[in-house]
Length: 228
Image (tube, rainbow, N blue to C red; front, side):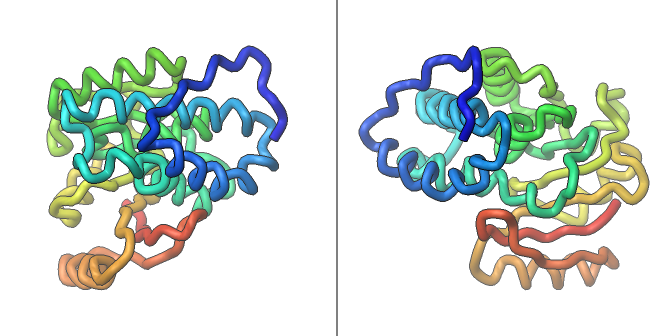
């Protein structure tokens, strides 16, 4: 990877994160090596994971059991959708952003994409604003509003050109909420991981009259995709 000028200092990671970060770097390095700002992106992704780890006990950002696998379980998985886009969308929504997955990692590697992180819980929205500020992510905005109230709240950045959903929930209802929040025909991506959840969700969507397909992401994660 080419080194980035003006890059900040990478944090010293807690001992329980180091091996996970090593595995993360090994997995992502081949992809980042072809990117002009790959070193800078790796630095920001590393700093972001450290911020989540540092604050997760206070705000309950992620499950306690996931604190030692932030990079491989959450940060790397968040980047799986890059395989589905020849060029980044000009704007996107991260619905139910929580700790910022997948919106923050995507914003780091897609600086040309304006991403709105939708998170209704004030403490978590405050954390997201802090992350965007500390990492200098000018392409990130935080909307502290319920997903179904996005359009009525006159949220800036709408209508968006893509949507990402990683939080669990009633997916058909979430997709209904995208009408008016996204341009017609905008792609949406839902993270399914492994197991049977993907087949179950596909069946649920089919019953609701929603067309979707299952695909494998850049780093092996399971995804569902469709259009608004």
